[in-house]
Amino acid sequence: MEQIITTHKLSKRYGDVLAVDELDLAVNRGEVYGLLGPNGAGKTTTLRMLLGLVRPTAGTAKVLNAPPGAQAGLARLGALVEEPAFYPYLSGRDNLRLLARYTGVSLQRADEVLERVELTARADSKVKTYSLGMRQRLGVAAALLKDPELLVLDEPTSGLDPRGMAEMRALIRSVGTGERTVLLCSHLLGEVEQTCDRVGVIDEGRMVRQAPVAELRASGRFVVAGEPLEDAERVCRQFPGVSDVEIVGGRLELTLDADKIGDLNAALQQAGVRVHELRQLERSLESVFLELTEEEED
Image (tube, rainbow, N blue to C red):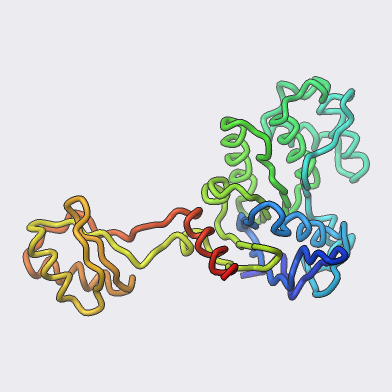
């Protein structure tokens, strides 16, 4: 799979503060990638280095096969870093048309992205009358003006109410389709869990874990529900590789390698157990995050 962003031992030091510490990052084309970490973990500093806004102290990075900040890469990406800034006494449409002139795209493109972020009805209102959620959506529209291959969003739901957060998540999923890649930076675990295909967890500037969301949430624990329960328990306890069998709420919970679950199902049916449920237990991304960051601290 083509990697659209790569870094190797990327580091940034501000005096005595090491904001980013030898970060290795890989973002694949066509995915929504979440850079996850607590406030102060180095997420925004990482984005600023990738966009060429600040220079790294050490290490290397490539964005769209070009060094950060190179015109070849900037022409193919759009970014919203921290809170977007617009001319308050201009309308949303006029702000975008002004940006369109600067970036060399057609003025018609402003209307297209306003419709994409569902701001057409308020396009001619002055930005000073926009709510925070509307300004955030206008910021995403500005980032989409060039129809970029890569969209970089830093805390796009910051300060939004629950409805605004849900609308922004839906928007991110809708634009992160096909060949377009989205790099989403957030400290909100629920947002990342519902939006991203793959995540990188960073803590104190270091990459702790990088994996698909489904892989992070998967556990070695399985639920087995069948009748009679006594026979199901007997088969499970005798099955090679099964451990930690417990009865919880009229079902069995046990630990087993995922590649052996089909064999366990066959053994249960051969013993005459009517299997109603056989599935892997999933952990919340919050529990995974806390586990990973606690391990890093240890």
